[in-house]
Image (cartoon, rainbow, N blue to C red; front, side):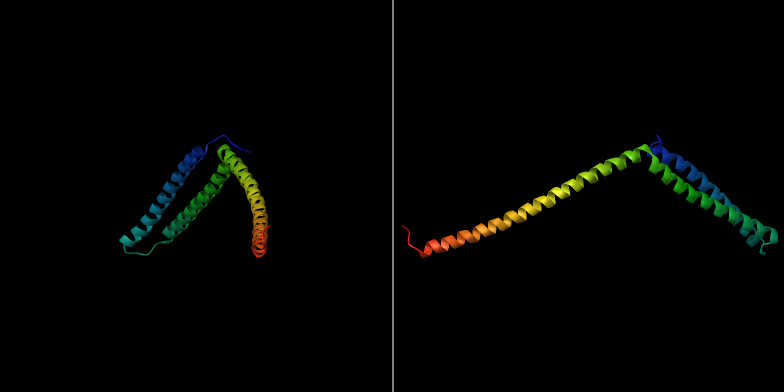
Length: 140
C-alpha cells in the first residue's frame, strides 16, 4: 500500500515529532537534575517523596525513549511504502535484471572467446607444423 507523501515530507513530519520528543526528554532530565541539585544544595539525602518523583520521571523518560524508537520504525515503514521508494525499488529491479542479462551475455562471449582461442592455438600449431614440413622438403 503506497502513499503519496514524498520522502522529504515524511522526514519533515518525523523531524517535528522527534524534536518534540527530544524537548520532552530534556524537560524530564531538567526535573531530575533539579531534584538532585536541591538535595545537594541543601546538603541532605533525598527524601522518600523525591525518590518517588525520580522513579516516576525516569519511567517517563524511558517511555519517551521507547516512543522515539517506535517513531523510527514507523518512519521506516512509511518510507518503505512511499511512492518514491516504490518507484526507486522498481527502477533498481529493472537495472538489476538488465545487469543479469549483461552478465549472461558476457559469460557467453567469454565461452566463445575461449573457443576462438583454442581454434587459433590449433591453427598456429598446424601452421607451424606445415612450415616445418615445408622447410624440410623441396618445393616443386
